[in-house]
Image: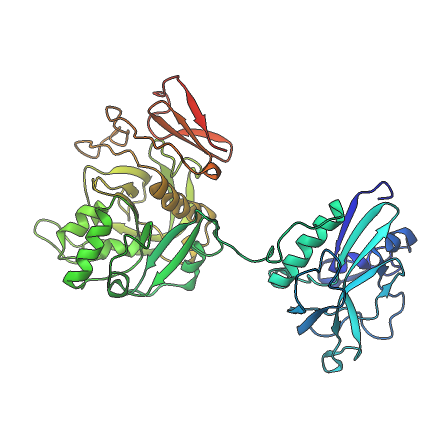
Length: 455
């Protein structure tokens, strides 16, 4: 530190080396006393008092953090302050070398001191710089935009002595090239864990339509890049059907999830688009499909495909469908051998105008909170929107029918965004994910030639 490096200390880090008991998980006292290390406080710029007249903080509550030094590079331009919901430390010892940037009034009604307490400060130690925040007790507190902005700018100042990050550095901002995703539900209950599949993803901005009528009341081609269906709809106006078909025929991506396979039982086009259907009642020689809840499934990829390659085998508890009418021309992605379900549980539809992936899995929170399932939905959404998925037309479901059609060229696009990490090799299409090079077609069929790497 004396040599000029930076230090960032968050929340309870000031507790260390202050002569107090070492605490275990959940603040259980261990009976071990950590001796005072004077230099630790000198580096941080302060410490907890050895014997406070009150507890170190009152009850967690919401309070206003006010910047009292708005000329320092960390605080400059951040306004008067922000509201935090956190623990409010009080009676901390701040050394003369520290420069307090923000304070908060410690309300006696919540166990506080009735005084303004230091919350954010900076410090110098030799040639080094330190930033300290008394905030950050838990994840929810650290998600606060004001906390994140001050922390990021404080860390930059500690490292460089200057601040270049913008005043909204802690704000959640979608990427400029983020996909526009519309998720359609309605007609079937589902747990709210379903929403977690789409929340917090910088790759996209998503909109929720609570019914198919709402989703397709007007055209969606110009407003969205990917359509995710998780509804159980049987009726749709003529205009709504037209808007859905226009989107499908525009060449954009569609993901059909779980009970959306039951949609529009009397609309043959929907079955053609999805590559299959769950039959809620018998149709001619086809008997009604069946289902079973809470089945432990062991699922594995069928061959190689960018959507499933990073995932590998899945083990999850989910609902099975059996007796679905699946097109013999689909490209299977995932299969299971469970007797209560059909063999294929995910596939690429042969529907030519668009790029459609159908995933039978995804009934409830057991699937929604499975990381493998979350990755599956993510991969399908991203790959369908950014790439053309290779399609094959095997004559029937048989061993080897999942292989991609090697007679068709894989169409490549130049000018892909740099942060999508694509590698284009001749007419073979590959993608870089988690350090692996994976081909869209047969990985052994890639020919040598000039490559273009976007990184």
